[in-house]
Length: 122
Image (cartoon, rainbow, N blue to C red):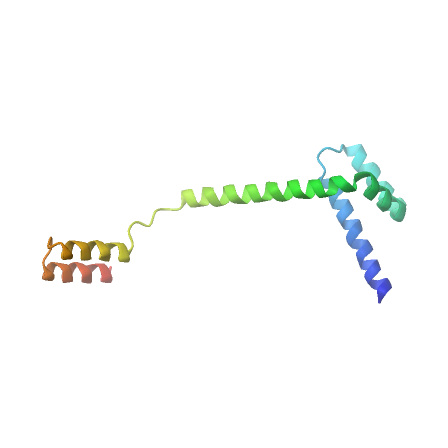
């Protein structure tokens, strides 16, 4: 069972390294090809050398990518909120306004009841 989990852990680490290799914008095509061949041909040595040589940068690139995704999400939400049509006053807002008019004596009881029924029906 231990060997099975170590085997799964090994493949997770390989996929993570391949993802990091191809996500890195600062590395050119030949560098990506070289690291990929090195990790495929000599997997144990390639993974350990990659972690030693570029391990610190893996975390930094992950943080940069997460921040970029969060910024893109926030800008999307702001754009979507700006494009949403305004709903206008709600029924509660209209009823509050009517109650204020009624309390100040600006409208009669009959007018208040008719306006209230119209708001609640519509």
